[in-house]
Length: 447
Image 1 (cartoon, one colour):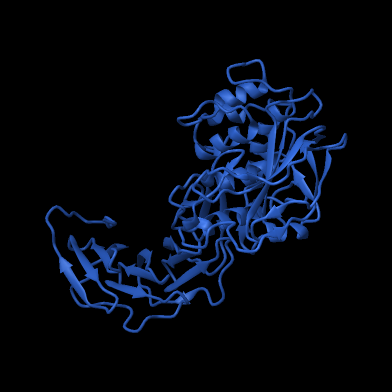
Image 2 (image 1 turned 120 degrees about the horizontal axis):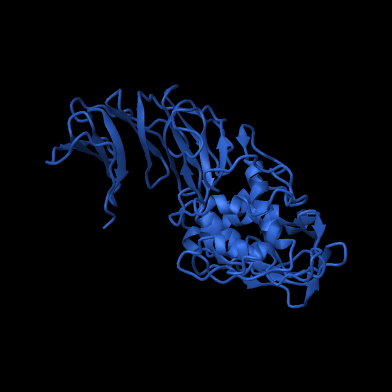
């Protein structure tokens, strides 16, 4: 799950921010329908996975490796362990997992964990690191896998809407697209072959907050590079970490993946205590933040695709983001990774764009506050015949739009305290209920 926030940039600027944080609605990860995850009819033989496990700059000796296939029965559903034999890291932190496992399909989503092990201070029972690898069919194309705090932060922040713990990462069949996109987003934040941020192939105009990722990695490393400790033991770094996070309604975490998940899901909680955890000489990664942040939301900035004074945005079922630009009279469409789709930005005869919503066919509808109209495009970016709709007197400084179950667009008019209902044929009705006062948005009860 992902949500759009304006944590570091305002919507009036020519950038917008993709914040990787808890979003049960799956706003940007895509709320879509699809075939059951990992339920393909043809099983796929696994591929060998080789790599290294590090705690900060230290190899972790004796860490236990496990490959998991993401769950498919709901959010945070149990993942399936794929290897039955015990695989541990050698004295240099290296490991090798044979390809003697089977995925239920090539699209089954795979992640790797390392637990326990010795980073130099003795075996740490609270140590847990992870890296999201993606579809099973792509494992053979990853030459080397690096597990450290950086891959853990990237994986946990991207997957946090879909996880409740180390062995519980999953999504229902209705949101396969969301989880698939979240796995792919890990590669924007980190290079999984090197354990460094950002990823190896960023789209043009994409900016990753690597310094923040390294700061979070240092927070985890303060526990990883120790002998462990339980919550409530203030003399240990693990104890301090586990006591400083917000576990929601659950118990305090007992491993570093769970602690990272709690931070990702409550990014504004106890920031000061967490920021100072590594101590002045305890930074395993020297490229961290130099000042304490307001929160630990990881926000990726996108500036490409013709974005110009963005006024509103919405996500379609595939996870693509449509941006109504305040200047330029066009609509920008970005893939879930921030890459402009071919043809974007699309001319749409916008005039003071104020709101945007996506219909059931994947096409965007945009309200034009200045033009007193509604513009409409197909899912391919073509202008629909009759658009923009500007029936005189029916749209007066429209500022909000939402769809009902019949596919009708409901539009709030801030200029005359009214609501207009526009159907797909372009016919419009107008209502003036009592109690409205310069409405700026609208929502539709789905029942």
